[in-house]
Image 1 (tube, rainbow, N blue to C red):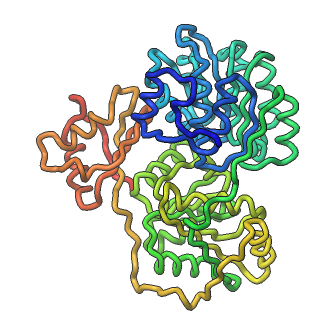
Image 2 (cartoon, rainbow, N blue to C red):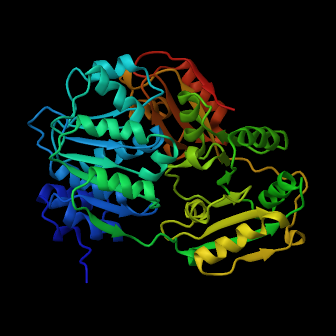
Image 3 (cartoon, rainbow, N blue to C red):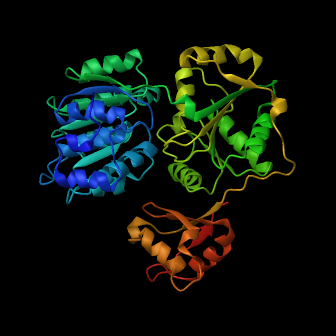
Amino acid sequence: MTTTAFKSLPLSTEFLANLESLDYKAMTSIQAQSLPAILNGQDIQAQAKTGSGKTAAFGIGLLHHINAQNYETQALVLCPTRELADQVAKEIRRLARPIANLKILILCGGSPINAQLASLEHQPHIVVGTPGRILKHLQKGSLKIDRVKTLVLDEADRMLDMGFHDDIMQIIHYAPAQRQTLLFSATYPDEIKEISLAIQNNPVDICVETLHDNKKIKQIFYEIEKGDRTKTLVALLQHYRPESTVVFCNRKHQCKELADELWQQGFHALALHGDLEQKDRDQVLVQFSNKSSSILIATDVAARGLDIKDLSAVINFELPHDPEIHIHRIGRTGRAGNEGLALSLFMTSEARKVTVIEEYQKSTVRIEPLSSLKSRENFKLSPPMVTLCINAGRKDKIRPGDILGALTANTNLPGKQIGKIDLFDNIAYVAVERSIAKQALKILTEGKIKGRRYRVRKLR
């Protein structure tokens, strides 16, 4: 039997103490199966679902091999999207608390390259980024990875879906032949196997159960008539009243159209798709994750790598073409022991897709009649929070505590009514309860943060 205690691993006392402080009690299946091999310097190819703990698995592994005294890039993590890169870097920073003077840098498209060039004047120990921007820096000579010990391909299947195959292979040429390569993928198409053969050395093959725990997810299908999708979606929202919902569409233009339509009907819905500017993507994700928007409408590619905790429901506005994608979609709800809700719409012409899903998950699906939905007249699904946007960020030396202090010091606002604070280079977002939004806006607009006035506005 595989031991699941982190203390069974050859990690330092300080590192183990930090894991304990982060509430890492026992290893997940992917961690227990992969960490001994990773710490031993072996290559691995691992199939694991989103939310399985794979980031900590490779994060602990690459940190174990870092020498913080050597100021050179020793680990490179490639991710399909900026959102996933941000999430990975955040997790590695948490894991790296016991290591002094460790520099971790995010290099992604959508961010100004000049600021990145300035940061690269002193080489980071760890780089996390997207293939396109990483390759651009390698070609410019601003990033050097010839001393990399650990190379990680995270969500490799999604990177291939997004057309990054050639960029990845070019990046490999800049890395040393003697290195550890860790490849993580939710699915294993032939192209992944070919990449593994080309870039890895006798990898340990690890496969963690890819089906989510259906016992924790209440999954219901509804058969609809042509032209009734939006009307049925509204009926689902009115009947179930989920606090936070991700609605999946298959095409990006549909996301925007649907979001606009829901807005007109009084729902706070935001669209996430590939045509958004990076700052707009950031803003959408901030509003959804801090509970100041109730509904996120997204394509599969745009939603990949999202780490939204306590997601009440997933709704398939359209069924995906691949049953494995369906399983990954619904696996975003019902996490951390919570009950989840997954609702799917299909027309008679799509019945074959439902059958394929049943075959894939080895169980029949529950199909309910639309008449079972109870609609509520004039029902509005108002998010509990409102986001305030401050025209200052990390580059202005602003910290979350400064914003919290500006709102609560010498005011009658209790700290418990202030939610998540998100900092970016030149902008900051703070979530406040809807009931105090006007008061909080007035305090920040008329007052000062760290002795300076900044422009503040309320997001819709």
